[in-house]
Image (cartoon, rainbow over the protein chains, first blue to last red):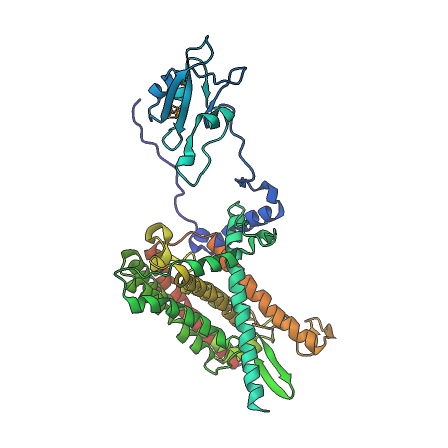
Length: 161
Length: 366
Ligand code: SF4
Ligand code: SF4
């Protein structure tokens, strides 16, 4: 596409009333006062979300914190295949596999940690998982914590979500 | 009567007026934040609570004060230690001192003594006010220079240039008032505004000197470093301007100085241009409306109406400071200088000339 020069229409010159400035100030004061009075009168119309008490409802496909799915028996669905850890661009998933007690299943994760401080919420882990064991549909992002350790989510935390 | 009585009266007046001003300062910091929030469609401070009550965030100034008290009181390495510590005091002291000459009510008679409701009824009135408020610039310049840092220095430079330019127009803009009321004593000016103009309008400064009022208001905002003239602390280019390097209570002293400036500025504006403690159409004996209607009001009610009207007017003009701050964007620096020297100064001179001419013509009976 060729580059074209777009002429933006600007007011030619300030009219006398505008260049005196005082009248325009009074108009501006009127605008701010209107906002002030409207917000005083109807506080519920202020768009602020009072965060810790009220949470914004995230759209359905919002990519939030991870959770691990369970089998009907309550065991993790994850088969410790390392697909997600391999796909992860931030290298923040740590898996330690163990032999599953269930003869039909080969392995299960003994440890499954996600370092939420390094996670970039790209969703590659979800894409990579062959058994749909990991999802990012909790609808919320990482909660603030006061130590780094608390932000390494372990398998118990991930299964609970 | 006894000197003890005089002393008690003096102390009482100082206590009442200073606590009024400082109380207003505290409330004003809250009004500023809350008002800004509502003007910008936000909620503003609403978290600090005592016994589960937030009352619209009214406890935030208290929380702020406590926070400032407990912050570390540091001095930057390269700063000039003495001047660095002196600057906040230099900013705060003149602001408080200017309160002294503002009449907040008519003289009252107690036990046969006439007591002016004014901390000091100086006969130089307005000149004292300008002399003292001119000193606030030292606080700002000292702070800028003593911090040994670029941004405060630029802020200090800007404010010195700005304050000097606007001091001129400010002084000239009230000359008209002095000519009309023939006194520099603030109590005289306030009393003079009790008369009627053409038999209908109260003879307030704003009606006899409308141009003087606009010039004075503008200069007042420039003097108090408030938007649209807050270049000395322009956040977008100078971080926080002259008090960038200040923390803890020293910073809050600068803040307090700014807000006291607003309160005193409003009080001066009210005294000069809005009748001070005068209540429209209220004479010593009671209301006397232009149509010849009049009814008596007891003396105590007259007094409280007058003091109340002073308070209401002052509070209103404090609000105007806030209102203007969140309406008008900051000027560019050359615009400030152009406005000060090329617009305000000639207008102030013309105003003086026209006032003089009109007074002369009235004197000659034309
Ligand atoms: S969302 Fe991306 S960065 Fe986070 S764990 Fe999954 S793959 Fe790694
Ligand atoms: S890809 Fe899925 S099954 Fe494989 S280790 Fe990750 S979560 Fe478990």
